[in-house]
Image (cartoon, rainbow, N blue to C red; front, side):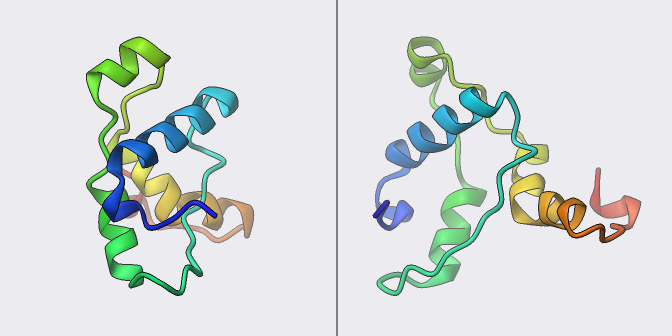
Length: 92
């Protein structure tokens, strides 16, 4: 159980940062939630607000989270996996 991220943004930064370090990219991450104890909108907002603090980037080697990373997590990666063509205006 990972818990509600909107209460633990640094923990979320650690999880996403370490996964991105292992994968080397955000192109294999997909956002999803079935956590019944928290509203989905707060979880979405936690990812939208996700920043990896400078001390985690330097101390742990985590990459910064970009708008491209967020777009990948919020649908572009899933669209690629399902072979859904995404209009170019949503990929920039």
